[in-house]
Amino acid sequence: MCVIGGGFTGLSAALNLAEQGLDVVLLEAETIGFGASGRNGGLIGSGQRRDVLETEEMFGLEASRVLWDFAEAAKTEIRERVAKHNIDCDLQKGQLVGIHTKRYAGWPAELSEALAERYDYPNTHALDREATRAMVATDDFIEGFFDNDAASIHPLNYALGLARACKDAGVRLFEHSRVTDYTHTDPARVNTAKGSVKASFIVLACNGYLGKLERRVAGKIMPINNFVIATEPLGAERANALISGRFGIHDTRFVVNYFRLTDDTRLLFGGGENYRPGFPRDIRNFVRPYMLRLFPQLADVAIEHAWGGTLSVTVNRLPHVGRLPPNLYFAQGYSGHGISTANFAGKIIAEAVTGNTKRFDIFATLPIRTFPGGTLLRYPGMVLGMLYYGMKDRL
Ligand SMILES: Cc1cc2nc3c(=O)[nH]c(=O)nc-3n(C[C@H](O)[C@H](O)[C@H](O)COP(=O)(O)OP(=O)(O)OC[C@H]3O[C@@H](n4cnc5c(N)ncnc54)[C@H](O)[C@@H]3O)c2cc1C
Image (cartoon, rainbow, N blue to C red; front, side, top):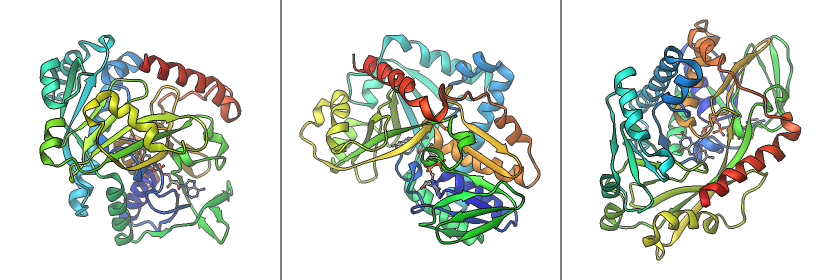
């Protein structure tokens, strides 16, 4: 088996495969967790990227329930991995969604009711403006939605913990080993600049960093760069006055703001994105205005860290999972909801390779359209669309 990519998708696939007794080589172009998996906001949401009200409308209640159950299994996979491998990654419970516009007023109550009644999920509740303000000191939110069973983690530490578990299970991990190409044969030959691997199956787990490696799936995703800052430590008192706990938070904007307190009382804040290769030169001052818009009281606080990463989205924001004959499995396009979904995708790819295709086949039937214009022309139209909705956020 050869897994290409050392993020959550690749690590999860490699670990689950090795645990089934397969001989697994993982090739990572840079270092483990170099991609989105080591750079993200750490928010683990329940459900899919589209909420159940939307998936019910798209696919009907029965299929929506299956997708919900998959997402619950994804959260369980992470919790079990953390416990089983003793991964020190600051796993915390809870997530708040802050409603920033009247357009979504009432959505928290409607969604909570649907989850309790049709999904046996009693862990969420709606919050009015005052209750939301008591949890997050911003005037931006007019309502809130709290999910007790969502979570957050230190994502890079989780990725490194998975990598350790992979090694313990016998996976051979090679960093600085960029795959240049592979044959479409059975077995396949996977090539890097310095060597090659013969493999009965390939797992392609490059997501937003795929580039031109596999043109047959590249047109289904659009890479997006997203940015994060971390403040200086705020101290316990100021941190608690800002956010009343260690839960993660995001808003309802198209270009979403997401944030949480870290264990050393920093505010980690994600906001802003771009749609072209390369990051802004000054990420600190690119993201800071997004933070100050919600928290003007942090104007005096220093930003100590700033970074960016690349994720990928699909047209309908549902994951793109599948198999290309004769022997290549892939998963990508988690659309900002990849911590749990990538880990789950890796697990069900391993199930499929070892003969249990039930869950994989269901996930692989999700209808994912190719971006108009494929890889060549997907940018102009999509970028215009993204910029338009981003501008609406700001207005
Ligand atoms: C800034 C940011 C914030 C985010 N916040 C959240 C969040 O709060 N919650 C959430 O659920 N999701 C979030 N996401 C999305 C989430 O991080 C991703 O969906 C998830 O990590 C994808 O994992 P992956 O393994 O598929 O891809 P990646 O982690 O991107 O891994 C792909 C790997 O493939 C390697 N690679 C590429 N090409 C080759 C090659 N030719 N040969 C060898 N290796 C190669 C890359 O170097 C990379 O390490 C965020 C993403 C970003 C960028």
